[in-house]
Image (cartoon, rainbow, N blue to C red; front, top):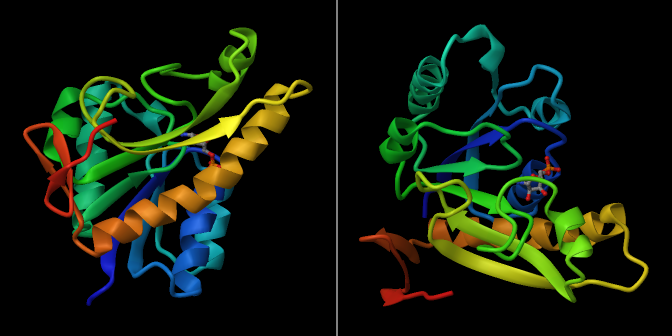
Length: 208
Ligand code: GRF
């Protein structure tokens, strides 16, 4: 099977990107990173991509006067690489409906909470403040609703008595680094589809 062509969008550290690079390197993930695109020039993930000889692109959102014009440029840039899957890995931009609809069914995101709980930011802090016993991560198709698209996989992480925002985030990240390459591998094996807003895995509806 040919490796699945992927474009990854980041804004920051890129530890999830690194987990994908590592799984491709050790051949447990049959994918090819065509490009890593960041809206921030100083994102450390860009260094990670360069080290792995992956083409990089910076599209600075501050250079655009509207979300629409930024997203139009981003769409063009992504399409240049003809990816079959677009991975959001810590990409901190709210996307326009046009952009999301353009890539609907072939764009996924990882979010550090058990959705629908804690959409948006500061998820670890909010889970701690609420006194939750469990937290976790969700991987979902991207839809026009922020952090609201159909869920592909969730993993729970226990909250410990002495957890801080940092310690909890760290343990969730460890699980993110396992889960994201796993879901991408399901794509490479052709096991995932999105039909009428319903995730299908191996031809059967997947429900969360
Ligand atoms: C992760 O926690 C991810 O779930 C969220 O942003 C963070 C990105 O971390 N969407 P990194 O840049 O992959 O280290």
